[in-house]
Length: 172
Image (tube, rainbow, N blue to C red; front, side, top):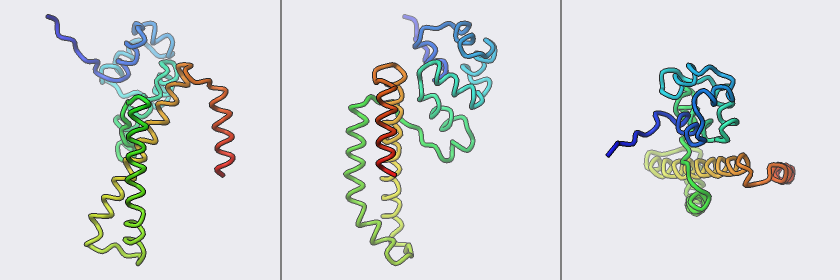
C-alpha cells in the first residue's frame, strides 16, 4: 500500500485542492513555475504580494494568516495561528470564549482598580489575557470563514459588503 504524503506547505495544499498543475497555477498567479515550486516546497519564502495574489486566485484567505503567523518575522510575534475550522465549530468556540470573558470582567476590574499589578494578581491577569487572546483568535477564525464563503460564492459579496458597511457606520 502506497503511503500518502502530506503537502509540504499550505500553498501547495491549496493548489492541489483546486486540481491545478504547477504550470497552470504559475500562469494564473503571474509568477514563474520555478518560483512557485520553491515556495511550495519551502525552498524560498514568498513575498507578501505573492501571498495576497495566491490568496485571491486560490480563493483561500487563510493563506494570509498562514504566511503572517508562520513565515513573517513580525507576524510570528504578533499574529496568532487561526484554526481552519468550519462555521459551527467556530461559533461554539466563540460563544465559549464570550462566556469566559463575562467571567473575567470583575477580575480585570479588581486587578487594575489600584493601577498596580501585585505579584498575587499576576496569575489572574495572565488567565484574563489568555482568555481574551482566545476570543481574538476565534473572531479571526470567523472572519476567515466568512471571507472564504464570500470568495467561493456561498455568500453574496455585494450583499455582504453592503451589510458590513451599514454595520460599520452604526458602530462608529
